[in-house]
Image 1 (cartoon, one colour):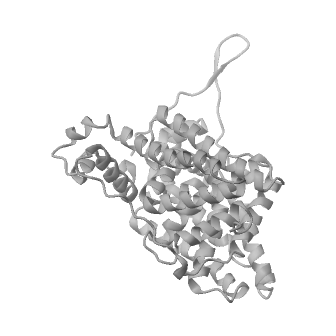
Image 2 (cartoon, one colour):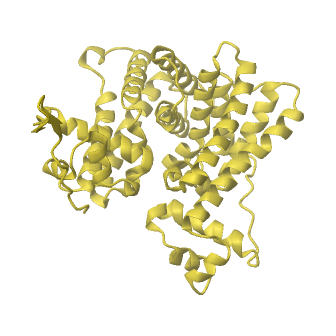
Image 3 (spheres, one colour):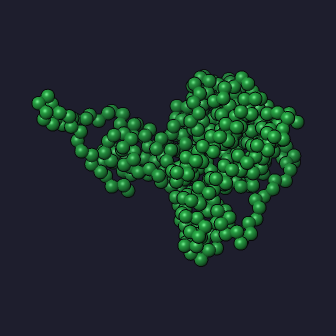
Length: 417
């Protein structure tokens, strides 16, 4: 537990120059302010990257005052994470006046309310998306149950709205719809609220109306290339990514990485990487370069923006399926990358998104540049979200289905053959 620190009373001076203590009254909504500030901090810097003093500083109070409301950082983290998930459950609850309405109208209501809540909690929702893995087991079970309830509501509405769908198709489309709506917390692209609401709603409805390829239409997906044991730096990176994916970066030590790579001691790791942070930065560079390296050749070999974008989508999905752990780590652990590397990586990511967005704009000129970027973020996040929800080896979430969903989000329909 972080040790409480006292903050000196704030003072002003009277007209004759003597010090006068200023008594600050405690706001009535202090607890709500603390919850909002902590959620934003956890979403931005990660659970392990935030202290009680950091949160207190955001509110301009002492950590002692913070401890009056919450006994520990975990108590704050737990309360805000479960508050957000509980809010999600409330959001998809159909009101009595719509109980007998057609399935399409109820589905519209659920999508609209989910979008409204995600926008209202945009700065803190990243906590729920990427940091909830640090909940203690019992709290994690509560969270998982709530997320399943949210998914079940959307899936059951699809049973009524599109009865022709197979159960696996409804499960994938429900998860994809939630991903599109939730992706708005992964970025800071600025679009007016009304336009952003319309854009996310259109993308969600495009996903709901998508026709997915059959499970027998899937071509074999290449697996990750086996790394020769002589390439120790590559093996170290591969094993580290697997550990970061399974346990979370803060929970993994250099000793763990050395053991997983078959090295005799942690000191052997430093022959290849300067630190654990350097390994994470190398993983991020690998993920970013995989995306950027495909852009130039795809554009050069295409007859127009739709063909180029279709090629990029397929390359991205195939690469992500071959390296699922890397794709997840890229989204979940950015707050743990050393600051000097984080700036460089953020710039590479922005450039990659910008190139994708230019292609989207070439296909859909009615979209602004910012709106195209929002859709690119939604499509890219879809890959990792579906992998998280359905699991790495779930046969219903195939690359061909993910490719089709990315197409309907970015192009607005399946790509022309």
